[in-house]
Image 1 (cartoon, rainbow, N blue to C red):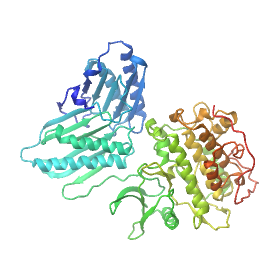
Image 2: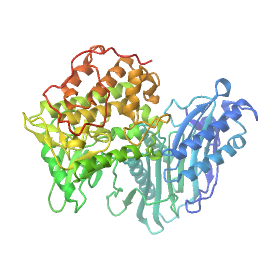
Image 3: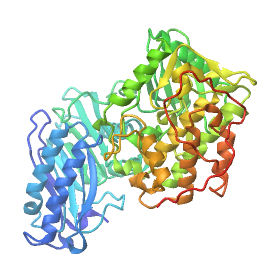
Image 4: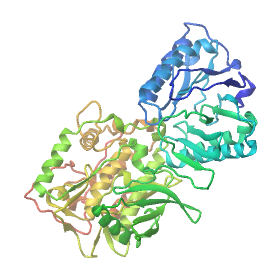
Amino acid sequence: MDGRAVRIPVLLAVLLASAAAQQWVGPWPNCDVTSGNYSAGSAYANSTLRLIFNLQSAASAAPALFASGSTGAGAAAAYGLMLCRGDLSASDCFDCGTRAGQDVQRVCNRTRDAALVYNQCYVRVAGADFLASTNNTGMVPLISGNNISSGVDVAAYDAAVTRLLNATAQYAVKQSPKLFATGQLVGLDSRIPNIWSMAQCAGDLSPALCRKCLDDLVARWWKEFPLNGNGARLAGSRCNLRSELGDVFYTGSPMVKLQMNGEAVVPAPSTDVVPATVGVLMQGDLSGQEVAVKRLSKGSGQGLEELKNELVLVAKLHHKNLVRLEGFCLEDGERLLVYEYMPNKSLDKLLFGTRNLQRIYTNLPRIYTLSLLVALHFHHKPENSDSVRPEEKRRLDWRKRFNIIEGVARGLQYLHEDSQKKIVHRDMKASNVLLDADMNPKIGDFGLARLFGQDQTRDVTNRIVGTFGYMSPEYVMRGQYSTKSDVFSFGILVVEIVTGQRNTGHYFHEQNEDIISIVWRHWSEGTIAEIIDDSLGRNYSETEVLKCVNIGLLCLQQNPVDRPTMSDVMVMLNGDATSSLPPAARPTFFLDPSSDYSYTSSGTASGTVSHPSAR
């Protein structure tokens, strides 16, 4: 639906205040007069106010400053969303929501579908459910200030604005987890030293839909606005775009900077393309192909060792569930590994948000390392910074999650059993599971991986490295690692995928228990449905969930010999029945230090178990 046909006003000529002034100007409304009106004090009126309060609370706490939702039922049902400018503080975002709550009934004369645009946020509330659609309805077009100077080449100006808008939109889609970007173009004309830009999408859009939405805005830009306009903005319920002369209207440095005297685009370095432990990661272009480039920080001796190890190992690996190495450079002071680009980034971003777990490096004796990890286990508190947008989690439906579990298992099976050399990854975790455009998983980051001889079953190290929450107990206690160490980490990953919770740093609110203890308790009591990720609702296969939880618990057995191999895991995943799966004992992190565990080529325990239902 074209919002201009039924909404008022069609175009607002306004002067947008600069970010430096932080003036609460606006709102600029889009009132759908065809949606009907409601009375003051009615149930729907109360729903709109309650919904806006909920939205401002959720958006100001979300990493992307976006929230959507509904409240009420029947004629009192209200649907809405709120998107704050990506560079705002949480408090400024919240304040913009407060202003919207004060204005929503007054400005649009209580129409049942009202969109309000401020310099700091976009808020829309409606009686009809518009959230299921990705159409950019509720559009508000704005022009800013006077026309450009008469001596400026209008055609060159228009081309420069279009170029800047396209570059800013591309950065928002390709390199920003917030789907937000700012830009600057310099050197067009002495009378126009700078052109500023911003592009942003609602947090529930995929990158592909975000790009389409922004492309549509660029395409209609010069149809909406005068060719010699000073600045303009198109703001809708799914995306918005803005260009401006004069003072910069956003905070911080531009993410994209264009020079008129050259074709260089200088983006800020991004660390969210693929996860890493050394240096930075950037998105690049190699002979027309999008790639991810891992660049080692200079002076990082530890990182160089890992980078070379990764290069030696990955160059020999070819499997659809492993990230493909496209090239490398270890000359002239540059240390680069070039990988295929993963547009959906890493699994942990979708499951948990933006905070990454940090690797632990220590040369301490193992008994001190264990003491350190035990202290971390009991004293690490939940952190709010790990929040993830609900709409991001909803992208991970059960079919995709099961496909990810199966794909990771297939990749580990290749490393352990099917490649020319047996390889132990040693850092298997959610942030090292990368997702391609179709959400297919690929294992990445082989900096800690080790080659094993074909007949070798385990190795011992005095240097404990890895990520807390994923390391197997025998590795932490005794420095022993093997393919069964990867199996243990895989078990943690399976539990996280099913529950949507980290094994460290997050706890279920009702209990101060770690996630493995919670899962075991519910498994034993037959109440697994209570700890399945809420974002799945009831849209999952009960049989597959039970199968995955059983497999995860088998992988978490205390003694490595009791854990399955990855080929065993693949057989269990592809089997039809759950009743024939081996029984799992209570998983535990703590081991008897005097024990020396045995390893065999096939460590699946025999027997069957009667599985409780996911009631």
